[in-house]
Length: 226
Image 1 (cartoon, rainbow, N blue to C red):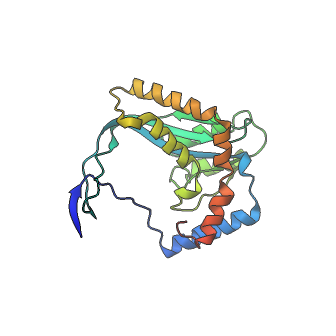
Image 2: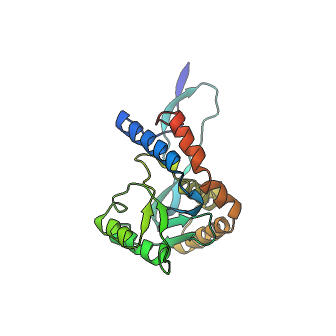
Image 3: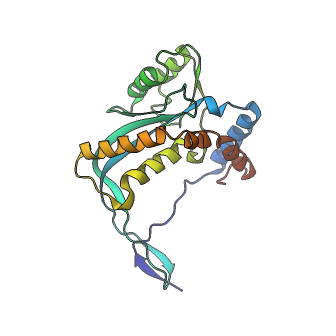
């Protein structure tokens, strides 16, 4: 018998319908067959880091007698927009760039200034299906500069290791319910955390080379959540 209490935050997952499940499975099967060089791939995503505040309590059913979860910090108010990219290869960029524009032109500028600048060889990137990543100006730039897109499937954060990086950074930045009162303070702590990640070659290698395992789990789940 359960009773209603506050503060427990339920776990949530993206809903995968049959069409998305088929796309995920087809992507995984194709990537396994093609044998992508994930060690030479740059993984990219955007993340927002905001000044912290107390989360509102949520009411859900739970077992009587269990200790309720207490309010967690959420990110509220103003913050810092970032684009985060990493690769296990020391010859490819691992960068966090603060930006004001997440739209197509801003993302094109990021690729131009931080991913392809000074390079003659093709660059493999993996990013999600955000509108800015699919913008005409970005696709045109990719064709011109020989940027090869690994084409992450829809609704599939489990295929993107940079999601793990973002979660790791947020744990470092907001751990122990830390709250920031200024963007300068937040930026300093965030830059310190990212420098720690960038210097951790083992962590970057393990994340990049986790793709074959992620792909296999999607195939075993027939496109569903592993």
